[in-house]
Length: 118
Image (cartoon, rainbow, N blue to C red; front, top):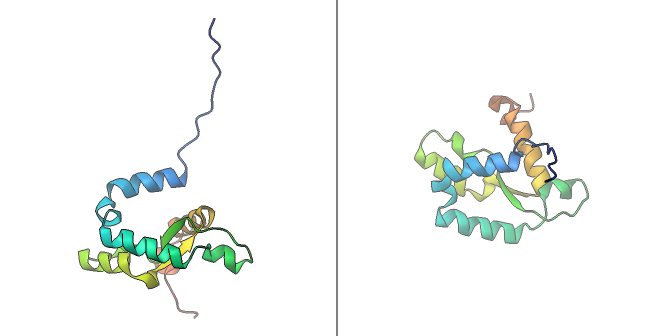
């Protein structure tokens, strides 16, 4: 008689959800040849996770994070500017990238992007 085990099915991780959204809604951006060249260039210059480095750890960067999400652009031109602006990028490890997205998704954007110290 076959042996059947009950397996707990966990919900998709942030990374799986992120990749699924990226592959559908944002494919025209992430599939852009200029983006791919910029990503390769930036990651070659910044091979260590920026957040880990601040905390004294040396962890390889595997993700390229947009500080201000390019999807917040008001029109196509602004989205492309945010997508391809090297000053809007930071190289992170997977854990730090997930943390940044958690904070971004659980904070009002006005508060998250406020650079005033008042």
